[in-house]
Length: 413
Image (cartoon, rainbow, N blue to C red; front, top):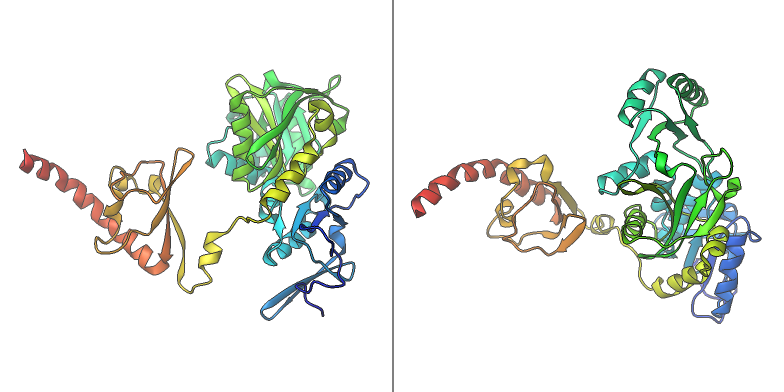
């Protein structure tokens, strides 16, 4: 089979500097058409590739890919993968990533955002405000779940869904129990979520491209419908976001691994709550409401960023046997709080810490004297056995060091 690295007589050859493909099953859909239009304005010849028509090949030491029976030869891909083909679409995307093709959103990012429970876990762990949520596996847990999220009414939803499908509002325990029971019997994974009364029937969609919000709109439901989705006949209007809403949207997209995302925000009393993050946001409603050329923003981002790719550093280092990346949650080792960084490692060796995560920031190459805090996360790299041994020894030694500190202070006095 002819390799994907060959440059002649293949799908995707053009005179332009960037060979761009858009993964979409609907070339006539508004969002896909707009991306194609804006790409052509920049002299590109974008190729719309149906994700279901890829063939993936894995052999000893090599991988390859065909689309419609021809080698797929592109520099960059914008995925527009529908929910119904998530599994296959992500498999294709991951294959392309392994071939070194730049992707606007990664397969991992798409999977994380489409599992509502997993997305909420990641967002909450990164201190991004979300509605209180419980995962329910039995109707006997419904009352406890309702109490946890703040009482009735509650939102009941399935973990996999799009455009408002699988989202329900229930006002009594009996109604919630009956609905949960029915969903569980159909094999669905069920969440019970806090109802934000002040945001009933409305939300904000922020369109994130790269590290900024390029457009936003407020969506409102019609009549008695509480879901505000544009596809459910909701209305849309332009909205100017407050800085805290922009920050929440950008951070939500980033921690889920998405460079292009539609972030849905609820306007709660105490500020924004991230409701959901969409990895293939529709462009029609937000372009019309915001009067922003979102497709142009996306194409500009793609053309400017294709020279750079996100790297899974742990995977990269694991190509060297025995090497890798470790993280240490200081909260799990409270005896380390207040200790200087250099107390964790042998004094005669270089400290293998290249970053410290603190208060939603990364401190690169932190000072040896920096004192550890309860919420810190250390990110270390190097030979794994040596790293683990050094850290384990430090955890044993630190309590003894801590006990000896008063003696030293008294001596100095």
